[in-house]
Amino acid sequence: MKFIVDHNVGKLARWLRMMGYDSVFFDGEDDSSMVRQALAEGRIILTRDTEIMKRRVVTSGRLKAVLIESEEPEQQIRQLMDTLDLKHQLRPFTLCLECNQPLVEKSPKEVEDRVPPYVYRTQSQYMECPACHRIYWRGTHWQAMTRKLDKLASVRGN
Ligand SMILES: [Zn+2]
Image (tube, rainbow, N blue to C red; front, side, top):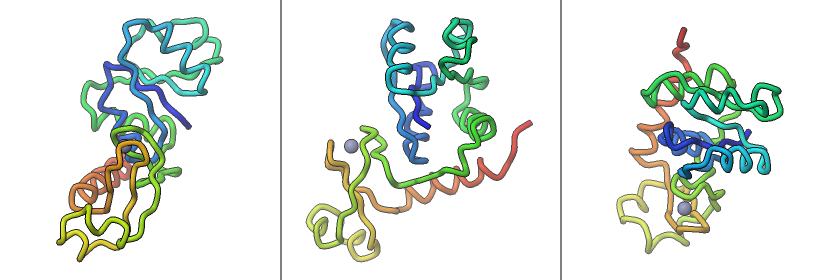
């Protein structure tokens, strides 16, 4: 499952990447170009724009789109988890949150000079983004996000 995230629900892109779902952000003005990109790349459109849902390509089922109901990111994630059953295919820690690139595993030795000493002492697993060269590890920020995801996955909305 791959996504294209409309600018009106832009925060979803980072959350989806964090869950391991390939997600690109669309910030153009022209809805038609978003539709074309979604078709060309096999992406599901996520949007709050009801006009997109009325397009023939969507109503006919040729292109999948999800109308996001809430303005609130946590509710948006919950809606996606429920409607698309995301939580059974979670692959956290596999995509760069900034560039959507697949992360590459690095040994502690390879990143020793590039992470803070306390991180090096306490973490044994590292991933690098081949595009922006950020190093990722399962630190406190990451743990807070995964805890939040676990919570959202376990509480079913109505
Ligand atoms: Zn990156």
